[in-house]
Length: 84
Image (cartoon, rainbow, N blue to C red; front, side):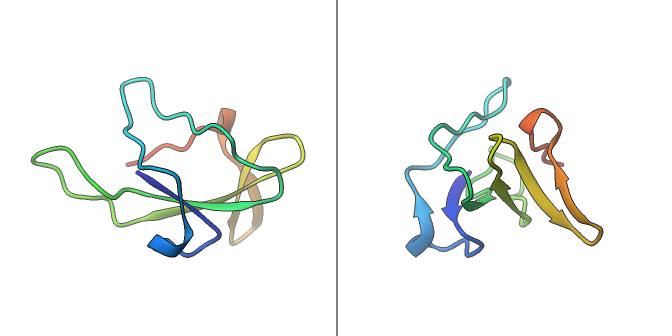
């Protein structure tokens, strides 16, 4: 996975190196309060397709990750994003 600052998932907005998700998930340190980030899968395990979806979220003042829905803002459960 790659992390991007803002909503554009392109090389100009990429933050740091890519992340590999293990059995315990993925922890991304250093996210800043009030900033918007987008997470995108950029490589998939052998025999799997890359998930084309992007996941855009903001870190609020309490350090919680929230995302926008058609009904307003929602928080990720325990700050965890689940990928299908």
